[in-house]
Image (cartoon, rainbow, N blue to C red; front, side, top):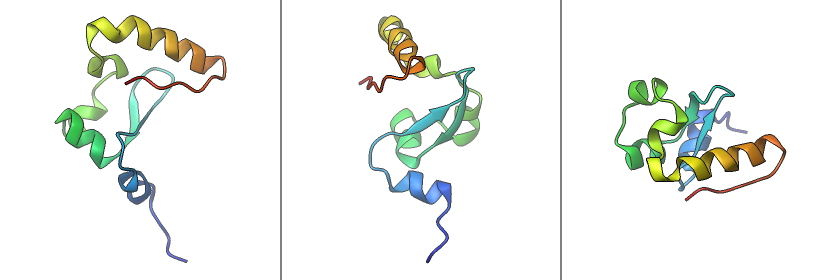
Length: 77
């Protein structure tokens, strides 16, 4: 079996995909995320999750993240 790296697997996902830690810092992301945001890997590493969410959507995003903390699965478009 081929030994696939996490990066290879994430880049195979056609949708934007990223993982943040409990502080909201990006820890993993795929190529599609870089393409959609226009940021470099170094720039993404310095961002907070709310840096990429438009101000008018921040309240909804915070509410959804609270639901995730309670075990729910959510999607924010």
